[in-house]
Structure formats: C-alpha cells, structure tokens
Amino acid sequence: MSTLSKDHLLRYKVIKEIVREYPEMSETLNKYFGENCLKRSGFKILSLEMACILFGVEQNRLIQEFEKIRFEKHE
Image (cartoon, rainbow, N blue to C red; front, side, top):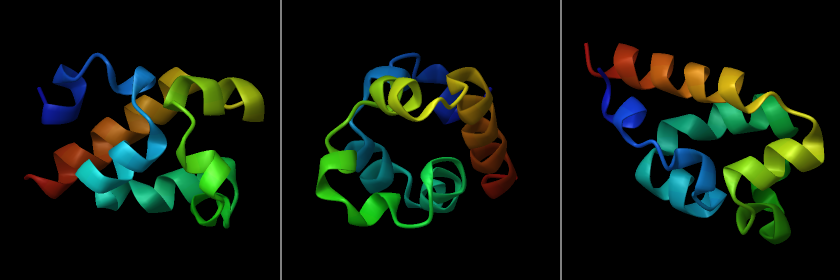
C-alpha cells in the first residue's frame, strides 16, 4: 500500500499542503483543474474535496491517480 493511500484524510487537505508534500502531484492537479490552477492563490487554499466539488472533478478518480503516481515513483 502506498504512503498516499494510507493518508485517508487527503481529501480534506488544503491543496497547497498536498503540493508541498507531494510536488509530483502538480501535473495531475493541472490536468484535472486547468493548466494555471496552481497559480491562483484562491485555489491553493481550497481543500481537495472542495476543489473537486467546485470544478466537478470526480474525487475518487483523482485520488486513485495520485496513488498510482506515488506507487510508480517509489518502485
């Protein structure tokens, strides 16, 4: 099981915290929320859950992609 999947509170973390802890996730966030999402300060203070709600992103799918990236990185 990856480190990320153990963190069951990821959905409640603020996006800037996620990017600080997992910088490799920036590209995935840009893919789901738009290329310039991380340049907007208001976006970075949202929880991942709230951002998914506001942007209509399927949160479980996004978290699964995060886990896949983390798993591949640590192989």
